[in-house]
Length: 399
Image (cartoon, rainbow, N blue to C red; front, side, top):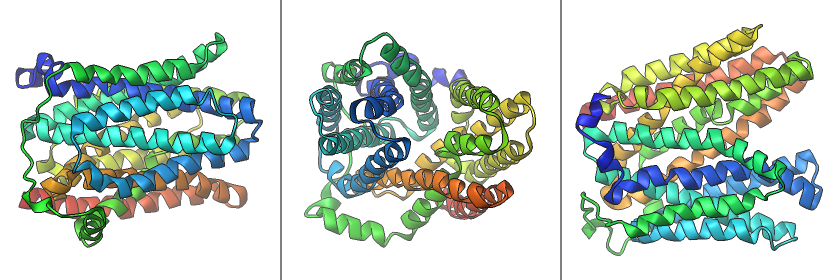
């Protein structure tokens, strides 16, 4: 905890840096919403399970792709106004979901909701990059991800508990998202001034063309999508795997243990490990990250006891903890100051990788030996990890 000699909690909870702890509340609202939303769709529209999956996956993927197009606009907007607007939009959408019985309108609202959340998260990452000096970025990021992981651990529990009490979680989500508005009461100034000369007269299309020609960004995006295929929705493909190997009772016992272990490991170790991750030792950290994923996946494939599942889930989660700051360091190193919003928004494309793995998993498990799925995941790790190792290490040396 010696890092607090350089960055005290007092600094984190005042002024512009308040965006870091306040980002907990929109994420808490999102986590509660997503867990309850499946019930909402089934009760309100009587959608079958397969159509619910298409509905949720559709608006998440559409939001991720549209965020890439809207990313360049973030560089031309006032960050404080953007974050306040995104907070209001999220709160309003949660409440508006009460009013519409049209499935098409609900889909549009969900796209808007997810887009507002992604824009807010991108703006928070931009604030961290500008507010904190290099030696404090890793601790600030680790605290941000600790808040995020805590929100994702608590959100589903709160959402389902409120629903059982006869209280719509949408009311809670609307209020929670609005708490971010407290940032309006704080003085807000970025300590790093971004030079705007280079981006004068540079439109959205021009920005996208520049990004498409940036091979560092393309390689980063490819590596991120591949690795997200391994860890982005691992709960889902683990559940699919368990269905084919265990009884329903055993499956529920194991998947609950996996969820709890993943959440607790993230909350307890995110700051402890994440604050030590530095760009200067990029190759060392990406090696540890990939090794954690490999050990975790191999353990999943051959585990035959609940204790083994808990152990290998904890090891796998260490890889998740490490990859998050590494991706931030990589994108920060390659992003021109006047295009930071556009570059940070490209990280949202990782949803493509995360969404594709359950589909591939279902196809493989339906007709092939489950070990082929393990080989598929190891292939993603090999290619994505190699790109990060080579290119990330090169950037660390030239920085």
